[in-house]
Length: 176
Image (cartoon, rainbow, N blue to C red; front, side):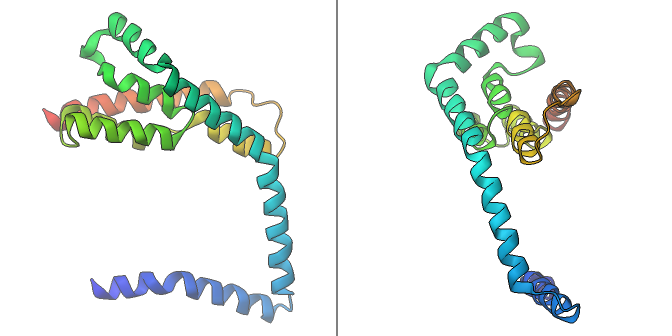
């Protein structure tokens, strides 16, 4: 086991050294290439900042306004607690926008129900089998200037629903 720990500590430094050595061998100005790449990365970050602020603001408004709790209550009335735990509706909705906000709700679920409970297991599975659709689409599509997303959003929603359904089925199976 110690061998694997030592190897894992050396992987990143060895990768960096090998990239620099390969660049020097090919007579590439390594440092200049690094600076150009860092400059391009900063331009991308500056281009994405308004979108990131908008997503964080929307997430904060959804949590603080009580809208998520209202939606959860309405969905609980329609679907009941038998198909999907109603307390996980806010996390499922918030997960579409922000992983860190959904993680905060996940920690609340752990504190209230426990990580090994049926609801805790379903929540854990749901977090690992779904994606932050709007964040991912905005970051990746804006960074390469994609304007027409075609079927990305419906496909992502379908994948998210499948991930949530699989989480419930597996959670029920694991917890018996």
